[in-house]
Amino acid sequence: MVLPVTSAARHREARIAQKTSDLAWMRQVAPQVMAAAAAGNGMASDESLVVLVDRTARESGIGSSIRDQSPAGQNGLQLRLEGAPFDALVAWLASLQQQYGVRVDAAIIGATNAPGLVNASLTLTHGQSPAS
Image (cartoon, rainbow, N blue to C red; front, side, top):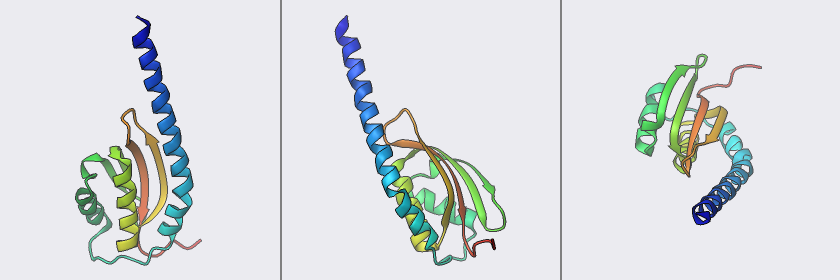
């Protein structure tokens, strides 16, 4: 009777250790992601941001994770993803920035119960930054 409890406890400890490691890595690369996003050089496409996000998300394998999209100002888009593979999400955001000049203005990314999957709320923009 003790063996299942001990096994479950070890499994939880391993998951916590992995999530702690993932969080440390996210915090480490966050400044690089934000710096890369700030260095955007404009859209390389005539597509609207909505179409671009939809198309590239599907191409990156995270299109099915998008649950909601809504406009955010003149050049922005807010979107919510559920159960997105973290690695694919980060690669997709980097691709949007590098290839199309799409900036990540805000991001809230949280772990799910499934290893490697996250929920995210993002605000993306393209074009000129609003005047301060």
